[in-house]
Image (cartoon, rainbow, N blue to C red; front, side):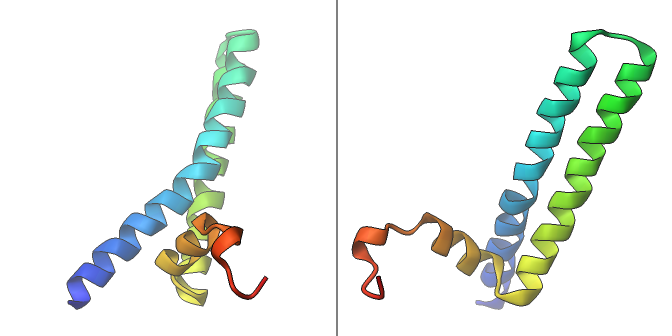
Length: 85
């Protein structure tokens, strides 16, 4: 059963890390496509890479602190069914 827990944690890590990466990629794409050029391409790639690094750091912190599956399940829960609120 430990292998399944690890696999689900890795999938959760990927889900958490991909969000800032997609935002960075979108911003980098806007920077590049607004006026395509070599320098703009480099800036766009750096912005996308920065999003990837931020996402990886954030996902790793979540994994170590409370676990990715718990983090994602808390983020997706409905407040209508939460008895503590």
